[in-house]
Image 1 (tube, rainbow, N blue to C red):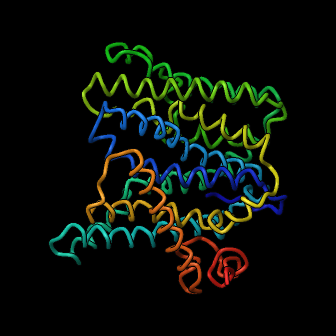
Image 2 (cartoon, helix red, strand yellow):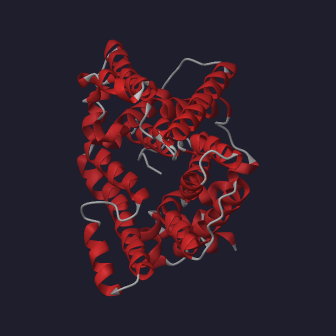
Length: 366
């Protein structure tokens, strides 16, 4: 959901990763209520395994944004950041914050205008809906991206190795700390590495995207699949055991900024980079959804909330999958319609009306 700025060849595998990320983030939020409601059942176990995969969504989005931004020469130009990148992110966040505030005011009952204003004003200091946190983080990373770009560009081979090692150690500490029993957790925190978990740990995935996107070494698919499978088993098993021990859903192993999920996202990133960086009929069919991914991300949780308010609160795995697809479709159709209205297109989607007419609006479809 980020953008780079250079004229470059299309990165086809990013389109696949964005689709995976969109479906995953919607599944993750749709599955939240079932996971809290029925811990321990067979259906819960299956939902938990798929949720363990789904939590790679935000790391994948951060990796793609990090690669696109930190490998673009325009990132060194702070004027370009202020005129092009920040307005797109801030404006889309602002209009969807207003839309979410309106829904929360109506759904909460009471004095709707007063509630709307309170929710809207709170958006200046904190996200009014849980998934908006990503936009706050992405805006902050965009503000410091020129410094990150110049820092990475100035590194020699040794510097890049040391930086990559620091990222690895930060992620390793989060993984080790997660594995430790509660009474031993304080001993797993090494302050120097904990202090490097900047931006809530999101900086690690952001920088990792640049390293993985520029990596020359080819890793065998079998190795990537083996690491992916082992890591997914650790996350799912750890989640099941911690949840059983505590008597309620425990998502500590599924932390989006933790080592286990970022390792899982890295395997997915590299697998698609090595095998799917080419055109295909599926990619072309999904291109409109990919182009509208920012708007879809921002609206989807509003539809999840609306579905819950309307009584669609089933907890089965199949039900969760069906609800995920319905929310995805509703989000896509809504954002596509907004992209088809000139005055609404850019504020709600981050896509210019001309670009929308060439690739994702109803005008383009018909």
